[in-house]
Image 1 (cartoon, one colour):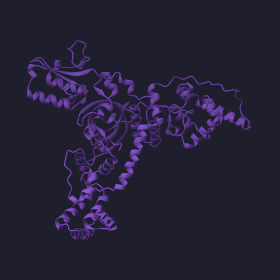
Image 2 (tube, one colour):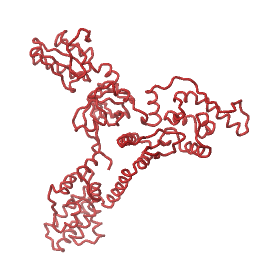
Image 3 (cartoon, rainbow, N blue to C red):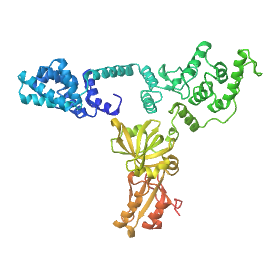
Image 4 (spheres, rainbow, N blue to C red):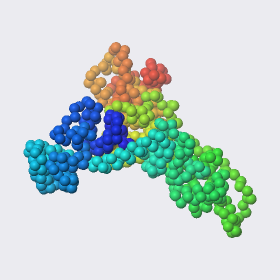
Length: 547
């Protein structure tokens, strides 16, 4: 029910009863999906309900004359051919196996049964042919009912107790980054805060916390269930932890090791103490050493001289930068919780640069420009041996699957790496289960884009160069250097300025400029700054020239 394709079907169907959910569950699969639109039209009275035979009305009325379930085959055999339920089930299985000898034997039995029940031989043949065609897509109604009832109950819980539902859901998808990202986006849409993990508040699972949800410790990498149980047991017996030193003194390193504590620091689980994560990390070894000494003293063992009271002294180091904080947090959690790296640049980007969420809402086939971070890169070779790639493009609004075909991949291969921040131009498309995806057309590093985002390639077409064949060469040169800088043409003859579409945007480089100047003349090619509204301003003496 959660796929975008299924949601689209349900929005068109506008279910009014439980049976609608059951039918969609049975029909939304590769074989029978062709009947979904017919089912919807008939439900809403846009198409007349027609039955293969009037006597089938009681069987097919609940599904508006559309054969949907395997159980309907059995009912038809009982009603029209006088089968017992046991024999009808044998027919259902024979049809499902699609073995010719079984079908032929059943066909004879079915047709003779229909004729014995006073139906014509022609009607019997038509009904059996319908049953055989149905075998390609028939679904078990009892299964569809079970799945639908579960979906209904979950939808009820999601609507009426969203914090509890989403907390349980997050616990169930720990480790699945794509689903976690989608769920975080849903939480934002619903106005539900996801609080960071905390060594004094979190338990193993995600749990509701008032109108918010507290991140579960089991969602932190390198923190096993044994370590979590030890931490919670100590906290339950002796109260909340006071600081990093108190934690290391009370929880033995053999139960919660250094790697686990480091991951919890990166994840923000120690932020409640008000110490920067860099300071906590720099002090960790010292805190572990003192903790071990105090534990030995408590056990009556010989130990080094240690303070009689907890001294909360942290090694003074520069704090983590925002970028470092997000990087390590992502390593520990598999997602960006406090912020996404793209957010830092959002104010510097023009409104024409869309978010992932805005792109998902575009009609299929539309072009979009997005600022994203590359994640989950998968490189493959086509059957002809050409390299291409799949990756996820993420920003603060969500994550979208992206396909980079060979002709694009060879031009931008160096930028398709995990953690790389890019500005993409891509075409909105649909992937598996009709979920949105991008077909990458061109890309530029975010840094390069921001450095030159207001620069366009300005080409003046004077009288001497206003020739069809020459302009065709200009077009071909533009197509050899795809990028994200607009191309502005100024036709001197009629003093008309034309800004070419994004499909003709270029990467401004020395090779392209040299080609253009050889075609249009030295003084007719330049890089110019754009005005705030995206229009080209008149040339100035300080405009960038290429040598």
